[in-house]
Each structure stands twice: as C-alpha cells, then as structure tokens.
Length: 195
Image (cartoon, rainbow, N blue to C red; front, side, top):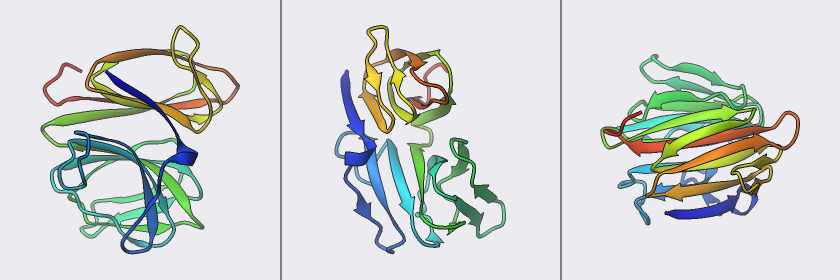
C-alpha cells in the first residue's frame, strides 16, 4: 500500500487557463494520470471568478464547499441549480453537465472527487465524532476542522492535514481531538466491488 501524508497549505496550486481560479491536486489514479486519463482524482479548487466548469465526459463528480461564501452552480439545460454555500455538505453531479459557477462573494475553496463512471465509484462523508472507517482500496482523509486521531496508535492529522492511500484496502479508526472537529473521508472502490 502506498500511504502518504499531505498538508493543504503545501500542495502546489495550478492556475486555471481561464484565470478564474486554481487547483491543488491531492491524488490521482493511476500515478501520473492527467485530466484526460485519470481513473479517479481528488483535489481542492479555489474559485475566484465566474466561469464554466470543465466538462468531463463519463465522470461522476462530488463537490463540497470548504471555505468562503460559496458558488452558485447552474447548468445550461436548467437541470442543475444549486447553491454550494453550506460548508462540508457534498453535492453530486455528472461531469458531462455544462455548468457555470458564479461566486456568491469573494474567493471560495471546494473539495472535489471525480471518478471514471463504470470503472470507479467514490463515497464522500464528513464525520464529527469517532467512527470506524470501512476498508477501501483507495482513499483520502482530510482534517477539515480541529485535529483527529486516525488509528489505534494515535497517529494525528492536524487541521488542514490529511492522508492518502492507494492500491490496497485500508481501514481507519478515527476520533476527534477537539470540540467541533470535522473530518472528510473519501473511500474509492472499483465499480464492481461490494459496497
């Protein structure tokens, strides 16, 4: 199993071509995959200006506001009209949707999970209390608020830090170390795996 830690503050940021924001990639599979050939991808985006979201044919997307006043998501066909303005509440949509994102104030940051439909599926949950996280072949933990113990040895993820694991099932026993703490848990499995 490949297991690595990361810090949101030190992830490299890649500016968008349209100048409307930037992306910090946390992890993608397979290693070295780009936007055209990933099986799954987890990232953080900062949205600074209104503009269209990139279209990803055959991809399922999960998005969640991290901080800021949020963004209004509207699709060209009118099927999606969603205000992403409540932190830590995931929203799912199809990557084919032609979506315009309009910031509701200044900059906002969101957490993104993308999986290639038919090959991978993802689950994104936010925990605020101790829990056992069931094994998954791939995944990400990110301390959204406060510090978290993530295993029985007491390994600590401080606020803004996380762990990513790939290509081998791993389970976690997580517990908050402070009041009001929240932890994002991403579990990624092959599409044909048992839930």
